[in-house]
Image (cartoon, rainbow, N blue to C red; front, side):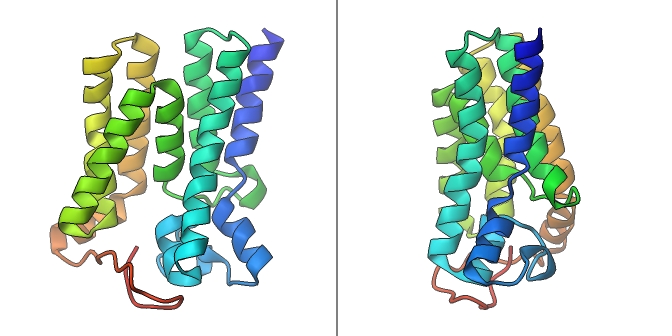
Length: 205
């Protein structure tokens, strides 16, 4: 159906709007793809622009995952289409057409998608991230743990096949995008979150 195809395309285009890159241009900051970890996401923005820039990036990246799915639901799209819209928004963040397909690792957008698909699963994933981040102060470890448990949360709370399928695919892609972080975690060289850092500080993404 044409409407469903347009919803999926729209979700990808919205997902392709990289909050970190756009905010850096608006604020006169260097391109996040060339600074720090090279990842246009909230953790790297904490280094480049400070807490407010990082918070804005996190919020906007979550929003672009949340809104397309909510729109699809409001238009009574089938659950399979809602899942496809969710994946398209997530994929847009990873490979944005507007920025030479150089996107972020997808954690914030995945959280927005999960909140839209099932808010209980989304909250459980966010809670897992927060607990791990507070305990270990390693952003990548918190993200990987949280997203690894997401399919389990869907299995426990909402066993609908399209949702389980999209959760599994997002999990696999997030682990792929974090492969360099996984190597650092195994080597014991992954940096820790430092909320006290100022722009340009020396915490790791």
